[in-house]
Image (cartoon, rainbow, N blue to C red; front, top):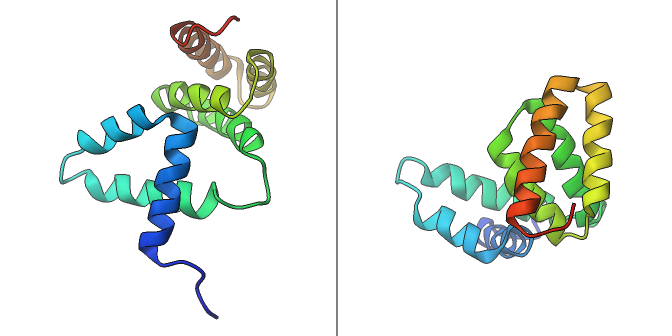
Length: 132
């Protein structure tokens, strides 16, 4: 089996996608502020999450964003949820669609998790000056 990309190429693809979805300023700030201890994790996330998975053709970015919102709600990961609300907007997810994803999570994940995600999503959308 021949590999299509080297690790460096997959990292570079991931870095480009990560910047497109989350915003270049956010990504550059994350990479600039990372400690030497945390650097391997940032590199892993960039290469594998963004370069190996987000680059796949099987799902549109909009769908991937909505899945992430649901999963991050299930995992109760507020900071990452806020980051991915911004990414979802960049990927064409509407505030109404974000609302529906979070409503769906209330039933399958639990109301407390969904309530927290509603609070985070609304604050993030307001911070972005997106009408809710």
